Image (cartoon, rainbow, N blue to C red; front, side, top):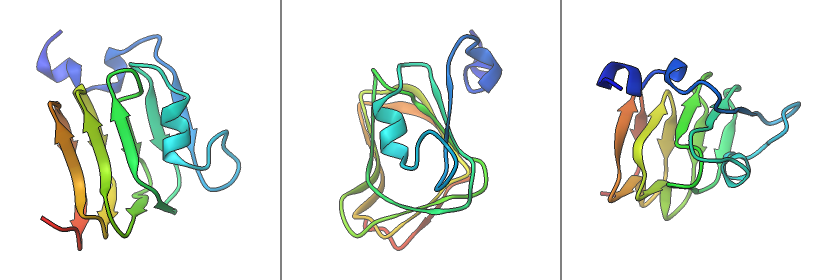
Amino acid sequence: MGKKCRYSPSCSPGSTEIAVCKSGCNYSTIQGAIDDSSAGDKIFIIDGGVYEENVVVDSTTASWIDCQAGANISGVSGDGFYFNETDDFVIVNCNIDHFTNGIHLLSSSGLIKNITLRDNGV
């Protein structure tokens, strides 16, 4: 699988697409969707809501997160997104603010694209 395909949603046929939104979806939290996901699944946050949560992703959960409407992941401490030993993760189109670390990678690699980080620690 070439690099171009590796980061395209069409490269994982058979994976489950999971929608997150504040109202009307099966999941109203990003972490809840991730906790019920499997490796290879894709999480789509389909509204522009504010999600006050810390998100932990590992090799057994969905590693594709797309804030399609520019959702805001906001906190007061800790990691906004923590990728723990996750290869080929994708996180796109999210606004992340007010965390100690906006995105924390531990033995992980992937694609971070169209992300806005504001008022996070270093």
